Amino acid sequence: MTTPPFSTQLVDETPWRQFVRDFMQSRIAVCGLALLLMVLLLALFAPWIAPQNPYDLSKLDLMDSKLAPGAQSMMGSTFWLGTDGMGRDMLSAILYGLRVSLLVGVVSGVIALAIGASLGVSAAFFGGRYEQILMRIVDIQLGFPAILVALILIAVLGSGVEKVIMALITVQWAYYARTARSAALVERNKEYMEAARGLGLPTWRVLLKHLIPNTLPPLIVVGTVQVAHAIALEATLSFLGLGLPITEPSLGLLISNGYEFMLSGKYWISVYPGVALLLTIVAINLVGDQLRDVLNPRLAR
Image (cartoon, rainbow, N blue to C red):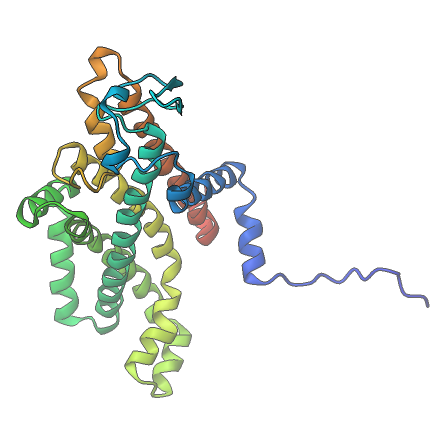
């Protein structure tokens, strides 16, 4: 009996390969991931890509203020996206603004995730009065609009990158805590958890090695959505003049700077930063939607 030249035995895929294959099934999600990677690369290499440093006053000229897209400066250089009221190249300003917006969104999201996940998982594991008190605090905070809480905190703390990050952490941690608690309650009574407790493993090891890793999938999905929400919230605060100072501009502040020129026809000062902000948030949300479908197929559309 001869054997076939090629084996027909199926090879089991590794979890990582299966995850990548499932994620790549959505063309929209792949486009969103490609757009997000492009935004991240542009923000990361902004000092080398941008035609000028838009916040170096020695390189700005008021004679170049409010030039239309494609216009040339007095020195002969071309402003492909025009300039704002201070003569800054809008393309350079947007690239630098992306850095600040992504920094605020990602840093606040990661810290809020760490705090909220720790509190939520511990509440589900220990239960009792600690869980009741923590979840009542979460319910109270989530009962108020996020923008209202952020406005109050910024009014108390003042402006600045670190102050905005602190405000966004305070706004976001409750979302992670509720999600982590719900996921941990599902995992708490499973067989592997009972086996870990039966072996007499230390509490810290049960939490870090068993419970927390199995609550990460829903937290990753919530994390992507919350990063986009944090970027939009920071842009709102900066647009209102309560977020970042003029020396540390973000996309929201760039939109605010051009708002007064909209009626005079200088649309590009606000529109182009708004388009960059929109594309960034849409890209993050598209990736987050597909992560939700892959990590929790029951919620897939």
